[in-house]
Amino acid sequence: MSLQVTGNHEVSPCDDVLAELADRVQGRRLCVLTGAGISTDSGIPDYRDESGAWKRPQPMTHQTYMASEWSRRRYWARSLVGYRLLAGAVPGTAHRDLAELERRGHLAGIITQNVDRLHQKAGTRQVIDLHGRADLVRCMQCNLLLKRNALHEHLATLNPDWVGMEAEVAPDGDADLEEVDFSSFRLAECPRCSSGILKPDVVFFGDNVSRPRLDRAMGMLARADALLVIGSSLMVFSGYRFARHAARQAMPIFCFNRGRTRADELFTFKHDRIDVGLATLLAVMPPSD
Image 1 (cartoon, rainbow, N blue to C red):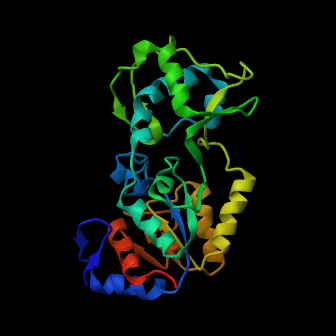
Image 2: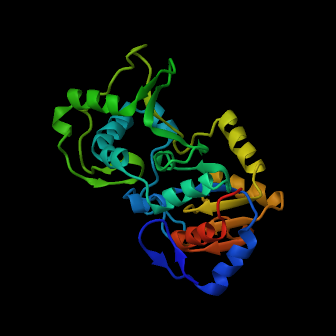
Image 3: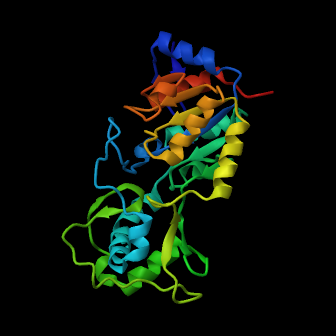
């Protein structure tokens, strides 16, 4: 059994394992839930190892960001270095494969825990950014939305000595600047109210997904016949809740992810290769009439 993947290469999966997936998935409309593992091929680091443990210190929480000016200085100084990779990332094969499955009519849509917008760049139309968008910044007082690139240009003008710094890039536009004094870093003011805290329009750890966004995501899942989890350990409840809900509805749950997840006991089928799993779907799910 040889399956053509989007691109110029082939994978030769195990017949028995993927024949089982092919048999289970045919005729089903999928809701896809994606996590950081789908974007690592685009050069964006992920948070957890194959056991589901943190690879690095836990990211800044919403409460810390809002309460501490020093923490905000640290965040934006590191972001001036790390966000360049996130902003310049391009969709990988998996993003393009999912866009093709949507074009063929087999997806109810994608719920992504990522903030990189790579699904949209790949051409997928029905995407819910569960944890928000890293390319936008919101004033927490007057609710003004700004383009993050424009804010970074302003921050670079305010802090020219920080622009040329080099550091190892971390997940979601962060960078590892250690043993650095952030006290001199100048923060930008909101251009409308001048007093509000500017924060990336993403759900930080310790914050909650908004009810309207959660309701839209649950509605997307309700329009599907099965849930497909790709590249997520589901250790964070905001993603795990969809697997738990699908299981309660007796909905099949497929997973393409390397290593342990929080929902392993709920899966109908699991494979550790995203590329091979998506190649199987493309092979057995032709364009709808």
